[in-house]
Image (cartoon, rainbow, N blue to C red):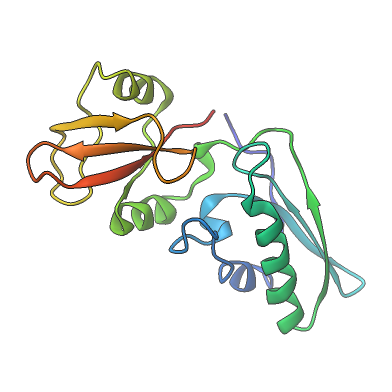
Length: 166
């Protein structure tokens, strides 16, 4: 799925890049791809965000964090939740994927590979500790609903895998 056109005032990017995802603090909301648009109109920043999944409990915190960051930069703000098109893991930036891996969460695979891994048909989820694909699914759900728990059969370390969402 292709992300709809983004309109983000360049002045706002450094501010929004400082707002972390509350569930994965090494990722900014920009790296997660939840910011759909951010424009300045009459000294009010209008930010549109899309939840990673419907009912995501982190969206209220993200909205509050955006308002706080923009307020510190001297802006009033208005946050709008946009549900369509739905967020997809394709919107995670390459920098965000690397940050996930460095943090110990395997980045999402494509939809087909994700299905094969989560059904236990293929060993393709790479261990974030040693890099081996000799891994096994422990649980369909990890620390949050959007993650699954895996374990490496080489180094024995457990790790989360961020499920592909389309």
